[in-house]
Amino acid sequence: MLFAEKPNGERTRCVLMKRLVNSKYIQIKNRGRKNWLKRTPPKICLYCARYDYEPLTIAPLGIGYIASYLVQQGIVSQEQICIVDTLDEAIEFKPDILGVSSVSQVIQDGRDFTKKCKEKTGCLTVLGGYHVTAVPQNLPEEFDIGVLSEGEITFAEIVNFFKLNKLTVTLGQIKGICYRKNGEIIINEPRGLIEDLDSLPLPYRHKEYSQEIPIFTSRGCQYRCIFCASKGFWMNRYRLRSADSVISEIVHLVNKYRTKRITINVLDDLWIANKKRFREIVEKLVALKIPDKTDFMGFCRSNVIYEEDIKLLKQLNYRCVRFGAETGSEVLLKRLKGDNISIADHQRVIDLCQKYKMPCRASFMFGVPGETMEDLEATITFLRKNKGKLEIGGFYFFNPIPGTEIWEEMKGNGMIPDTFKLENLTQLDFNKDIFSWDDILYFNEENVSLEEFRELIHKIKAEFIYDTFRKKAKLTVKKYLPKKFMTYVKRLISIKSRMSIG
Ligand code: B12
Ligand code: SF4
Image (cartoon, rainbow, N blue to C red):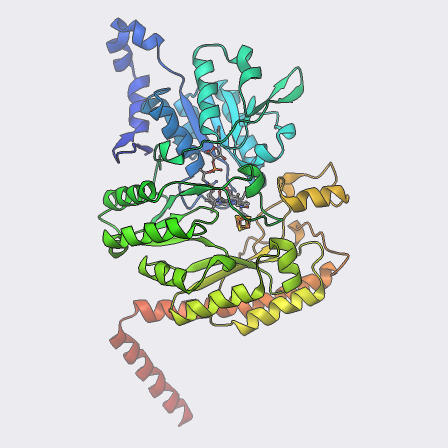
């Protein structure tokens, strides 16, 4: 069953509504209301592209914002818009417009989905999100229009012109889109960003994927990591919602799910960067006793976390401090993330987490062009030094993605040819079973041969991943098996070993 959530927390049964709207009963009842039928706005279906082997774990907020904005502006009613997870749901909804959200790695799924939906329903197809924003000139043929960067206002304009039957003649006027005209891709002038993020409605979270409920409290990042697409996407701007707006959304979510314990997952690039707002949010949430009812998680960057921040995170019932360490090599770290961060920052965060008994999780990146054997050794040394203090968030194989500085660098030096196929980029986390060495596109042969690299990764996996796994299993057993039972098991083991010694 599909649900759409109104900002006030009410839910509408989209599927049920859709069935009613399509049913004979409603059509007969509506016979006398021709005007209403005529004025029916277009039906809009939204989908977030994904890996076929990995379902979404949290509600996609990008299309959630698009949906709630259209309703807030009165452009469509809540029944006319639906967020779907499968092609069948989309086809059954019979949309006039299909909006797809996609990052570069999953664009093939977005294309396949759109092709089939368009064939069955003949709908207008619109692509939004990171991929099309980074490479608008490559708007895939399945899509009629691409929406670049922030999507709310631009998509609303598209829907409005569609409603008025004027879309074809007005395409040239809509800022922030790309589209195809006589076989050529036209890219219109950019649209400015929304100044007051508080003016946006709360996003629809159409269903619960897990107990993690996502929120987005700022757009953009002040930093400039060369492998990250954020700065280009948000046009080098970092905008914040006010502390009060964030608090009221959190309170609304906690009240809505009051029967169960949820985790508020703050998805921002870096939500604690503005310390004044961060402190205000924490202090007000603590005063409202929100951390008694829920816990929190979110991303950090090691150079912005100090003792003061850990204390605030602790008060917030933060599940763990997560940051992208990327490497243990000072030289490589500065190349990847800039001069304003150092390995000492990583170490400070890990040590502070130890001091305040806060779990600490970091992810690492391997195989970036220019990484030397010394860099890899430095990462191993760093991991060894922090064994037992640090959870591994991911051991990622480096993927160049459009819209990043390193992508441009690699295009410039010929490492990424024009024929490069983005669908060859896959999720490459050495931590996961789905990783296959046959799939990888390796760009650092010049410094470390693939053979050496592979050997080293096996070593790292054996030493650090399996170790973390064992530790986790031990902790789970400890937490979930009652004390008495554990004593009984221990006693049994000791009797057995005494017997075998005898
Ligand atoms: C939550 C999240 C996930 C979740 C859910 C995915 C999702 N798409 O919601 C999970 C954990 C599954 C995930 C997975 C991956 N993610 Co992710 N993820 C994020 C994260 C942290 C937040 C996304 C979000 O909710 N943003 C909030 C909303 C408001 O912004 P938005 O989605 O960009 O939407 C706005 C516009 O883009 C536009 N828009 C978006 N969609 C549409 C659709 C239409 C029709 C229109 C008109 C407009 C429009 O309008 C929206 C409102 O203005 C971002 C980082 C970030 N802070 O943004 C990374 C990020 C999007 N992820 C990224 C990556 C690389 C991945 C993975 C490929 C990782 C991997 N190696 O496997 C996978 C891909 C799988 C997938 N389905 O997306 C990159 C994308 C970079 C790129 N250029 O492609 C990001 C930007 C992180 C980064 N800084 O590098 N991710
Ligand atoms: S990786 Fe994180 S800190 Fe670096 S630019 Fe991207 S969002 Fe900002």
